[in-house]
Amino acid sequence: MKLRTIIIDDEPIALDKLRTYVEKTPLLQLVGAFSNGMDALEKLTAADGSEVDVIFTDINMPDINGMEMIGALPRPPLTVFITAHPDYAAESYRHSAVDYLLKPYSFADFQRAVTKVADRSRSTPLSAQPASRQPDARPAGSGESDSIFIKVDYRYIRVNLSDISYIKGYGEYLQVYTSSSPVTPMLTLSSFAAIREKLSPQFIQIHRSYIVNMDHVLHIERARIVMAADTYLPVGDSYKAALQSYLATHAIGGATKKD
Image (cartoon, rainbow, N blue to C red):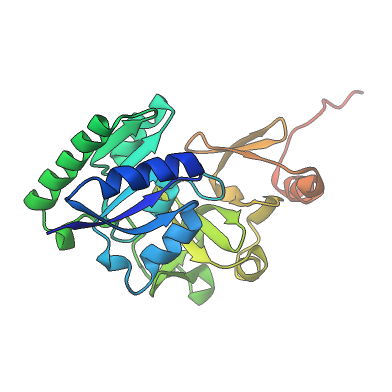
């Protein structure tokens, strides 16, 4: 039986190379080729997304990278990551990747990855592949205003506001990072304007692409915010006033008073 395959790479030449390699491999059946992660994610989260057995995806892509895209899937297919940066190797395996191809790779390298995919598919039924980690849907702490429901695929996941670390905007999409799942965010079709009205006062927009929960901030330095997991978020010039206003009522210290 052929493995239904999706390929993703934002570089046209690299995507054509992947297409050629897949079409030359009898075990694989190409069912989709995408030049960006968002289009691929739409395919994978659609009704027929479960009909994909394996993904070959580049990591470095605009808007949403390959790891973020795979992390947004509740039950990702078998995955082979592709990149020109060897530093991503260890992180790719944290996403349960079957293999990792370092550019430039040969057809022989690709075939070795396909062999690993075939071995994994035989040893583990595709329906039993591990799901991406999602936050527990636990009751709110002190009422409905302490939590929100976030639509991910076809589910509404209940998340405590206090568990949200920060939110990143990707065009029409939001990635919601939580303390219970700091590496794998939830991806939802929404806007900052829509989610802002549901957030509590400790959430501050610090950049056109970021809203942070100040309760999760480790420290602030040099126009950037450092989160507990050593994540550095920039503070945009037009958002500094709002941050300073928050700090005016939530911070102490400053210049030493002289007599």
